[in-house]
Length: 147
Image 1: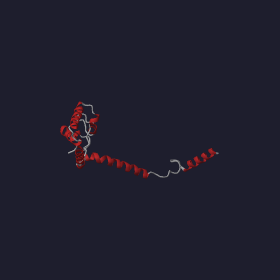
Image 2 (image 1 turned 30 degrees about the horizontal axis):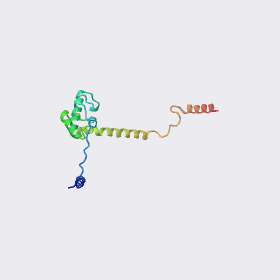
Image 3 (image 1 turned 60 degrees about the vertical axis):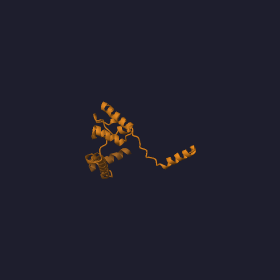
Image 4 (image 1 turned 135 degrees about the vertical axis):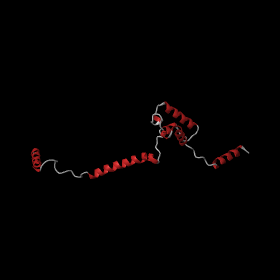
């Protein structure tokens, strides 16, 4: 087989084999903001505890081994427990962490809209607290001061 034929066959074979979907390689910063330090309870990206350094080292080893983000998170949960995850589950009681804030925001927006709708649209006539005689005297004195 000639060199040109071999190159043509290799090119044809490369085009014929569907490309495997490229798996996005995860990184330490990509995971650090989604897991917690098990000692101080802060996001790993902000923790300076020695345990946080050990957790980062474990994450780096798992990344070097080619693990996906979910596999790394699963390994962290197996090592440190569910509390290591910074993002709450989307089921059970932890679902309230996803549901309550938007509901509270909607309730606050609705309350503000209702209060704005109910406020008086026209200013009250005359200054408040003046009886008609005082209001008449005030108008007369203001008119005399202009002239």
